[in-house]
Amino acid sequence: MILFLTSLLLPLTITHDATARVPDETSTTQGGRPMHLVKKYDNLRDPICRKKRRAHHRPGPCKRVLTLRTTYRYAHPNPARQLTRGDNEFWCKDWSAVARGTYYVNWKEEIKGTYCWITGPRFPEIYRNDWRCGYSSAIGYDVRVEDCWDERRTGDTTAGWWISVYDKWRVSAAFRGFPLHWTYQMHVNLHPTGNITLKHDD
Image (cartoon, rainbow, N blue to C red; front, side, top):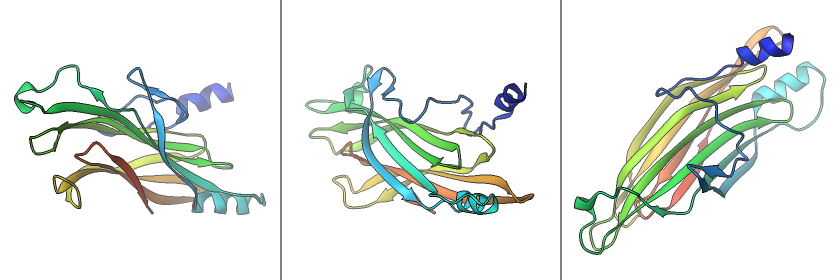
């Protein structure tokens, strides 16, 4: 009964109408297409895990892991013909970035989406960027998205700009009877060349 009630009370963060729990980050498909590991940040500090372990006199490692997976590019089934005149091509990629606490801490925050861009004689540009934050879960902890937004940024790319998708969230837990929380942030950079990169910020 306790396990059953616990499963009902596991927190799901709702942001941008994202209400569904997603599979574990080891899942290798999205939209029927295989996803491939692009970048993994390992052994990032997790202050909540460290304090919880010290409070319970449990030595051992604590770490936070961020991973980015994408599909190979594929032709969009309904290309924007007015934007793909001549030799231009309309491509898309699915992507998923997951942050999770491991060892003593058991929580997960995911941001995922699909983005499309144009290649060819026409000036490259990002045509569409669909994304959602808030696919979160935790056992004994609360994961709450505090902000979820995108930003058009300039940089050293063919088109001179790209879009960064940000996900800022807070992980909370009880620490010797007192609430403890830490805020994390990650963002995914979507380049007009089809390149997707991941960056984390504490």
